[in-house]
Length: 97
Image 1: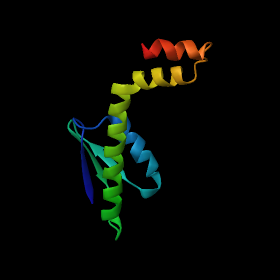
Image 2: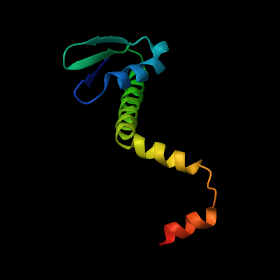
Image 3: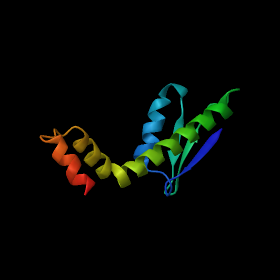
Image 4: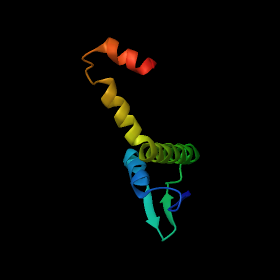
């Protein structure tokens, strides 16, 4: 069974990361300038494996894109969440204005 994964839609690091999770499934990878071709061994569970791989690639690509777009905001939120506030009442009053 062959899975085609478009290089224009998915990052190479994302595809590699997902394939790493499936090392024990003997997936053979070929590629051209447009796609990766993931060759699965024909088994009775190949359709299920194909679905899992495609779901994981999509999930990881979305995480990758969200991190690239919102990573700085997340870092800022975490920084402020753990930043000590010397005068909590004054900080609350300043934000209420």
